[in-house]
Image (cartoon, rainbow, N blue to C red; front, side, top):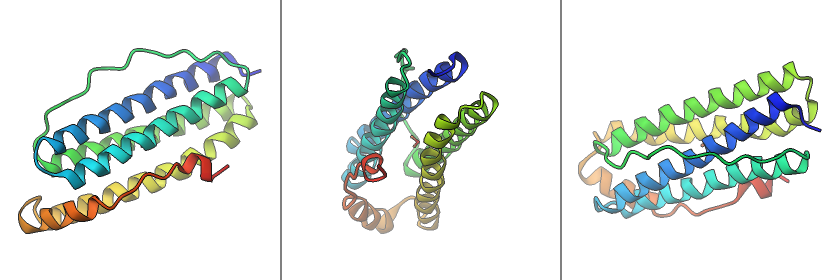
Length: 171
Ligand code: FEO
């Protein structure tokens, strides 16, 4: 049976992952309404990925015999100041999520919860990838100043991204 402190922290993380999902969905809507369907697609897939993260925590809590407690999700920002602003906010958000995952690992170590520690390893690795992907896009955006023909080309490239449920592939 999972200990209360760990359970509460995992329930908070379900909420954080659901927040992430809706944040990226809101960014997808922003791109759609600003004539960037490729960027909208990239963010929509990001939304789908975050839902799989939330679900992975949800299933884990159930599996360990804990009670899932779903919480209110905060209001999303709907307006942004261009593509660079969106990706800077995405990068900041992913760094925040990395900190949350690290704190969960700290609690798992403190509570001597080896099962949760092992479960969290997937997320530790995932965050390295998430931050690197966003950083790469941000670097390209800065190179082309977030505008002009470069944005058009990048938008076409972003359209190619397809959804893969990596939480399933890892199991
Ligand atoms: Fe679920 Fe993007 O971290």
